[in-house]
Length: 290
Ligand SMILES: C[S@@+](CC[C@H](N)C(=O)[O-])C[C@H]1O[C@@H](n2cnc3c(N)ncnc32)[C@H](O)[C@@H]1O
Image (cartoon, rainbow, N blue to C red; front, side):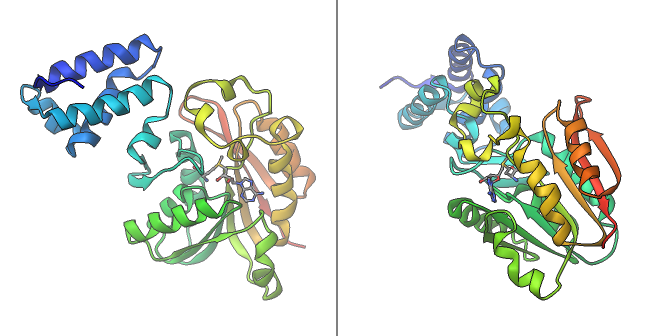
């Protein structure tokens, strides 16, 4: 353990250099976020008070986190949180760390959630990122999130409670399997959204960066990554109200295949939306009813 007192800006500079050496693309930012987490301060504080000295105990905690980051562990698992749509969400290794790309899905859903009230379903809700973003923006809507993993359901519930978002509920379900009650009662959804697993099992991203530490069932699907997307396109028809929309996030190269799956399943007005990097990221279609 380092016994001497060290200035915060020195500590940061050394930490960033260590992370650069591991090939981290966001070394300085990662070091700042980890140090802020240890000190319980924000980055503005760190920039303002860089000439202060860190306590030995804080240095030791920072060193421990830094060593785990050097080994590749995602910053969001080390700090236990990640911001999505302006909401601070607790994260843990039971599910995916929310990605900025997914905000494209939230934007597209909000454009279609124009009524003052409605019913929305998020399939594979993970931390609750999408469901919570939409519920916070549309307090008159009833939002339901489902996930296969009980730990993810519990995490999403904790996030909702922490954020004080009351118009959302979470439930364990293998996609539509636990929605029998809604179906029997004829309670259909105006919007169904999902960011399902969509990587092929030989996708090179699986052996790089944060993805190595995330659960495979949150990432990988059969049929070259398209199996869950196709399953959701078919299954959502039984749960959408006439005129309701299905919105699916997918990989940058999967737009054409997802549009085809939606059109084959009978959806109308099928289109794709690009993310900020210009990649087709979300495809959607309107269910005319039958
Ligand atoms: C790509 S992650 C998305 C998580 C979250 N919606 C987000 O955007 O950050 C996919 C999620 O689908 C869940 N999932 C995988 N298979 C499922 C299934 N058969 N039924 C329900 N959820 C499933 C995973 O547990 C994981 O939380």
